Length: 215
Image (cartoon, rainbow, N blue to C red; front, side, top):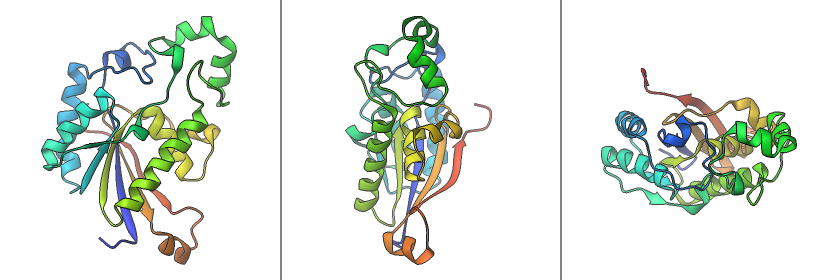
């Protein structure tokens, strides 16, 4: 592949018990549930078939467990990157949405209409967007022309993708959530190629929230 194009395969981690219970995880280090392990094993050969050159992952256990299974199928050892961690939800970690409605109705109302805010003791959505977008730009700069797998988290990936495509936090709500062990394909043109094409952003979304059939 020419250095003019770097390809990304973005994978959300497999299902956890907290996902099943609709609890916020954030930076809590929750492992994969049995179903999440099966999802990771099912998606691994699909990702391997795309012939990646490198795998980069969030250091949180659920992402590392997913990345290791993909790595075994690809013959690649995943590299952890702290910038790919999920949003820090602070004191909301472990709570259900029903709990939040009782404890912080104003913040929940803002969340549901797409207005950005700081999670108590944690991050804002815009901070996460900028962190993930910065990580992706940095990875692209170090691996031009390669195919890169990034294993991260639902909120982080969704908002980061939106930022790379030129959107803000409110716009990220329109993308819809990413399913466990789904993959999304994103291209990054070189700056020279982007200028030659007259593109508003060097990033191009090719596929979103793809899943193994029957999952």
